[in-house]
Length: 184
Image (cartoon, rainbow, N blue to C red; front, side):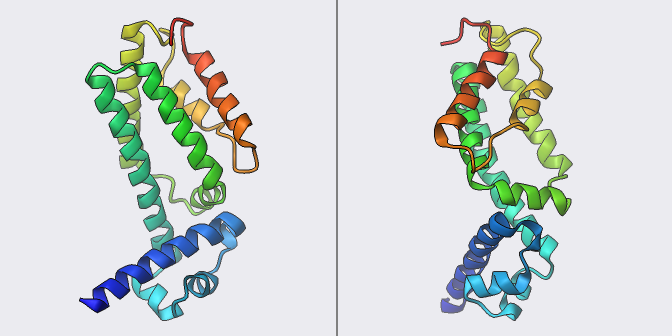
């Protein structure tokens, strides 16, 4: 049982170190550096993640899980009668915070080709489509707004070098472009 706890702790330490170093160095973060930062032997890192792509894939899975927790919760609340614009606001705020923390990780994922996950994209677009449709039914989102518009706006998320007030301003401006003016 202790070995399993050690293995789980090592895996968590490796992922934490990888996120930190990838955020700082991008794709130049080496496996040896990640192992050293995690406090594990290089062999331990490779037992958990045989390739850098496997390691980055695990980070993508973690990030995706957090994103889908936020998105699925928003969709559930909208389906239960919650205000679509309020949920879209919460999602934009969550995304702005996440982008501020994971800029280097996002760049590394894009450069290593791990961001291209059609299964995840389809799931995300489906959830956003439900929120957009609900907002249009409510009359709070403009009738010409598409899921593509929401995705385009999210692609302009500010990074971690942008102060918090500016990230909040981004949320406000993004919502102004999508809403009818009758949104709360």
